[in-house]
Image (tube, rainbow, N blue to C red; front, side, top):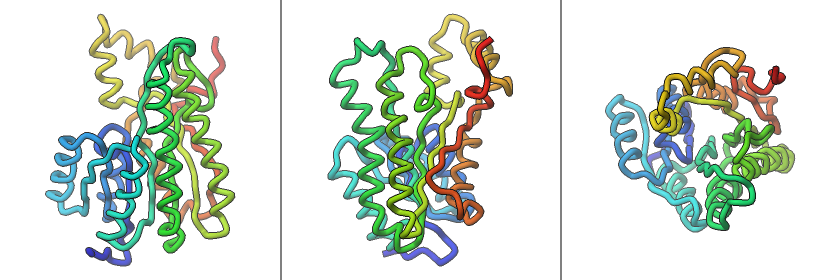
Length: 258
C-alpha cells in the first residue's frame, strides 16, 4: 500500500482521461493530490498518467468499463488497497447520444443510463464508507441539459436530471456523516467531442461563432473552468456547501430567448 501523506488527498475521477475529466485530474494533481484516472480508453489514460508522473505529480490510470457494476467495485477496491483512502469522488464519466425521443433504441437508453446515472450511484455508494472516514466529498458532473433541454436530448437530459436529484438525496443522507455531495452543470465547453463536431461541419468556424453568440459571455467555455469549480467544491472553502448544483455556462440559462 502506498499511503498518501496527510497533506495529499486521494481523488478518483471517472472519465478522467479526456475533456472535462482530464482537466479535473490535472487541477487536483497540480495541487499535490493523488489522482486515480478511471477511464475506458487505455491509450489516453496511459498517456495522461505518464505526463502527470513525468511532471512529478502522483497519478495512476485504471482502465474500466462503467457499464459493469463489478468493475466499479474493483475500482474502489484498487484505490483503497493502494492508498488506504478516498477523499474525493468525481463522477464525471458520461456519454451522449442524440436522437428524437421516439427514435432512441433500448441500447441507447441502457448505455446512457448505465454510464451517466447508475455508475455514479454505484461509485458513490461503494466509496461512501471510505469518504465517511475522511469526511470527504462527492462531485457529480451533470449538465445544463438536466435543467433545460435542446431537441434530441431527452434521454441524455433524463440521466443528468436524475443525477441532480441523486445529488440532493445523497447530500441529505450523508450529511450527518460529514460527506458533502454537490453537482456541476456545464454548458457549452470546448472539449475534443465538440471539436470533432465542429470539424464535421461544412463551415465549422461559422457554427462555432453561432453557438458562442447565443451565450451572454460570448464564448465557449474551457474544461479548466469546470475543473476550477470542482476543485473549490472539494476544498475546505466549500465546507458549508452540500446538496447544491452549480451552473457553469457563461450565462446561457439566465438568458431569455429574444
